[in-house]
Length: 119
Length: 161
Image 1: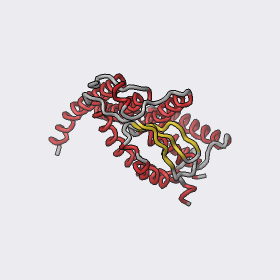
Image 2: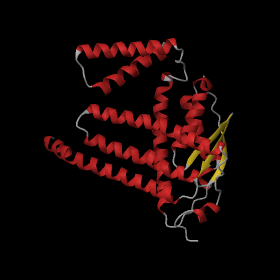
Image 3: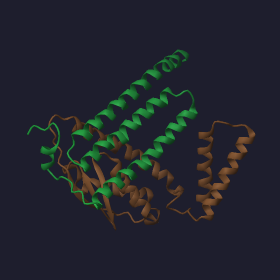
Image 4: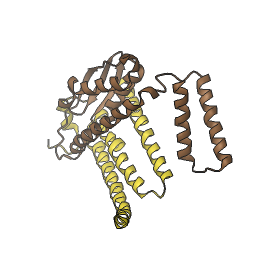
């Protein structure tokens, strides 16, 4: 039983680091999406990958590497606040764009305007 | 009264978690500040079923878990869309009707739509939400049915009563 615990304690920081890296890669993917997508609204969708999965996975990774439970609590608080405020700010952006009269690209027309399309 | 005690419990837990200093003096000051902010919140009349939905807390937790699964599924779709060599997105604006009645339930539903990657709520008018989606196929009104019913079930205290 003690050996198992020792193995777990040794493996924990490795898993934490791997999860932090995964979160970083997901944030990179979100950024690639922001650069490739054609208009404001679709770019907002790509940014929301960074908002949700990248943040969650990176925070779990940091929690696994945390030295004390206090840090874990703070990371959990950061996560909860982000999940409450993130959609509010995204909605505020989308709503402001809609109010200002930004027309979204609809349907297949959006494809040819994006970066990296075949046409 | 329930919401007052709930606020005291939440603020106290937050203080205990964030502080890290538990000497008697600091703990008393923390307890004092928790009580003071709770009393101020009551005096400002900012405490009601919408701002402090502690009665619905267990159901909100269930809803949150379900929402996390949905977010992971939607994330996968958007990640694939970001990395595909040829963009195959098919953006669309759709109007979604909600059955939620209270402001909090509507907010929960609209924020859940925004939180799931691939859909953003743009405008809330009465009981209709204008949603911008990355894929038209994934954003038919039926696709939001379950989320709507669940957020009504979890948060809409008055609607359920």
